[in-house]
Every structure is written in structure tokens, then in C-alpha cells.
Length: 168
Image 1 (spheres, one colour):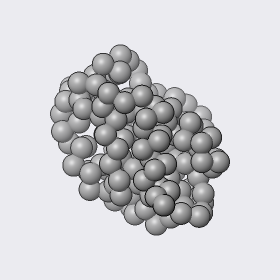
Image 2 (spheres, helix red, strand yellow):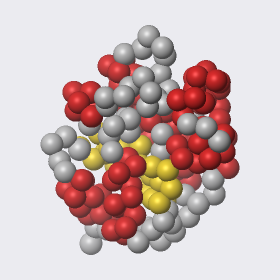
Image 3 (spheres, one colour):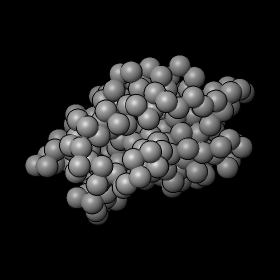
Image 4 (spheres, helix red, strand yellow):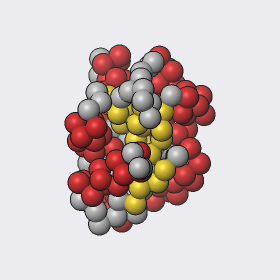
């Protein structure tokens, strides 16, 4: 566990960033959000980056940012689309434990109110349901652990993660 990154993956709205910050405080590790790294590198917001570069261009930028990161002993919240890049996932897994924050589609729909402006890498006419259907098997494929976040508050999720990571 020492020096390993704890990497949170999952759909937009699953709570990766919020839980990541609290988890990092709980286990005394620095926190990084890869969406923020992308915004810093591109000097723009995610939605603008997607609009300017298209989804494929955005995914390419996301992959290059992930591959440039060389972190140890961090909690990392990833963008929901990171799982489209096998190179990124292998890079993250090399020095990390991937935790899928699993939330049912209905709960995600209730959380995401700004789907058109949030910066989600999805087709212009794509529904959240089709995005969920496409991504869920990829999250499951790459994750080391899956945390069921349905009807759980953040403290419950953090407790579940820490108990998985630090089993005695």
C-alpha cells in the first residue's frame, strides 16, 4: 500500500472529486483531480476544450495528461472518460489501486443537472443512459475494487474504501 496511488474511476456525478478530497484527508495523501490538470494544461474549461477539439481531440489531450503524470502515494480523481484509453489505464494501474465508484443511472441522473455545460465527453445527441451503458463495463474491467455508492453518504463510501485498502 505504501507509495501506491488510490485512483477513483466512475461516471460523472459519482462523487470522484468530492470523495477523493475527503479520502485524501482521511488517509493523509495528497489529492489530484485529472480534470483540473487538463484545464491547467489547456488553460480552459473542460466544456470549451471539448467544443474546440471534439471528443476525440479531448480524449487525446486527456490521455497525454494522464501519461505525463508520475505520481506516488496520491489520491487521484479521474475524468469519467479516462477508461477509453487503455494506455492511460495501464499507466494508472502500474502504480495504483483503481476503485470504481458505482452508482446507478437513476442516481447519476438526479445528481447531474448541468449535463450540457459540465464538460462530459459524450456525443452531441448521446443520452446519459447510452453513455452509462457504454462505460460501465469498462469501469468494471479496469477496477481493482468496486464500491456500491447507492444510498450511501460520503462517510460510508470513505469507510468502505479505507476498510478495503487497510484490511487487517
